[in-house]
Image 1: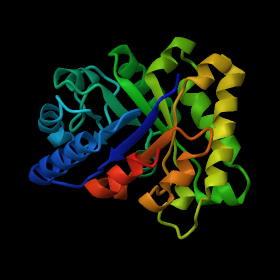
Image 2: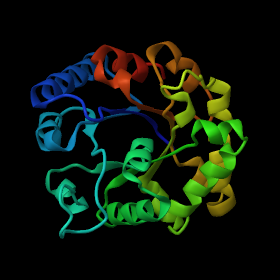
Image 3: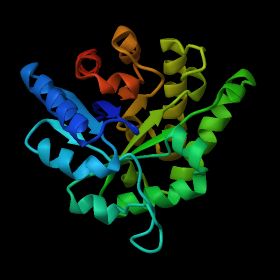
Image 4: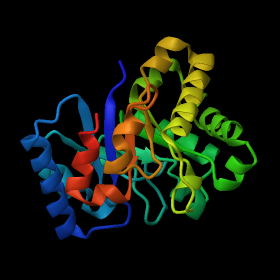
Length: 252
């Protein structure tokens, strides 16, 4: 059975002091409001992961890394491995985010290796993908999204999807002035689930959570989350406010 999930990607924001403050606020609000039935995740920057993981350990808030390398160790300056994440009790990682693809040149082949490394170390993967504005205007959105999923994930056995969450990012609707409607989100999520059905069958597809990552805010979260194939959100800017983030969590 798929889960409702709201994950906050803090990106390159918040030093240690600000990260601790925000994590405490989120954990307190989740506890105070007795949030049930929704998995709540926060993803601080890597230098603060260990401290935030310790701080939230006894709470209902889980911590994720924003990225990791595919190698166990070696001459990869500035990178972190799955084993390093495990050693500080971080059990979830975001892979394939549009900013990693755009700014750091991460392609499907590289991401497939990262996914393999994470799963081999029993780390849950939030796998991101999505089309840019040019793809959407050309009507190529399904072809692009389908290829990103197939190239990075379809070498896996069906059982691997127990540890994978999908996150659709309509890159064209983030900071472009364009707006994605809840109906557009549902249409793409339905396509994604059908793509999984075609490869792995309905049982696998029906149990994979698919998050929406297109500028979710307290004002639009309830309508977006009401769509049948939308199982939550990967939240950017709104995750930097504990009150806004909680409001999105409560949209379920």
